[in-house]
Image 1 (cartoon, rainbow, N blue to C red):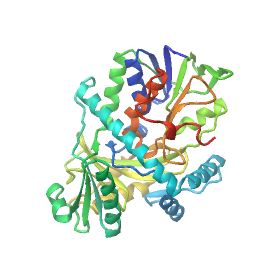
Image 2: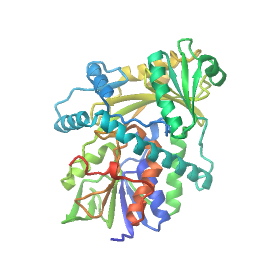
Image 3: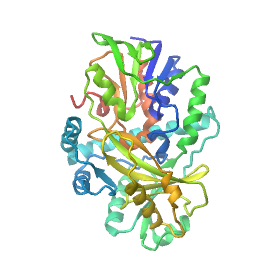
Image 4: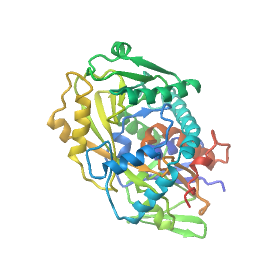
Length: 416
């Protein structure tokens, strides 16, 4: 099959990056997404490009944290008890995936897709197709307050260094030379020089403007059903229109599971809510940083500083848990001297629902059930980092090219 027109369901960073590479291959692309404003995970994330993040979220440590946090909604990882059958199914698959063997097998594929994606971000930046958007390659500091956390992260760093990625282990004196004004309780850091960061609220609109200049149509409607014949999707249905589709790319993030049910497909995904606080003023933050114990990510973006973090598995909802926002603010104030986040700034916090698969790996590939359905979703906390690589791989599949890397580990039917 050699489709000429593609309908992408989902206008976040995954959908836009898929469109970016598909239009370069000459496809006619439409993106359908009911959202018209700058909300969602693609806008509120930390903006990191993270070759250093080689471990899947699905591990025994996360299970223990989840069980401990079930009744503590301010903890870094909060799992809200629920009798929802999809949630119970996801939890069971998460438990089955969280074995040392699975974690170890996932490391090289997570590393490789992160490296590929960072290279593609660099190419996108250097092309100047979207102007001079921020791509800061000064790296990320992993700050620790306990020797246990520091020793564990140092082991990760040594592994990355052996794989050829740039990282340094910094004592407090060395750290102060890079990032002054840290709380005295911070003992040191791992500096992942291989990492970088961007400003999502800058890049997302620039990417949309570029795509529209190439003929991509953005349709702000909700997908409510499909018309299909055997193994081929014929139309995507919204309340307003029916859209003919030669090929469909599912990139709807946390909403993908619900939409795919219209095709009688079950894809385990849970929404992992993350929060952000933006400060449009001078702060002590000079380098991107992650607090190892508190699990918060701090980014000096273009025009503001972002304080983000936490993972909340509570289903898709619009509830802002003020205790989680407060936890991010408190952790940040406890890591930097002379930092105080105001009530007004905390009240302006926003959240995004990140699509989390049971094994922490994205779904990238072609469906076995439909010959014109492709999946680009389930990226958990690495959605922003992995978007260009995902878009490139989808375009390679649709043009019958050899993929830039093996995608067997990302197969969308692996939990069937």
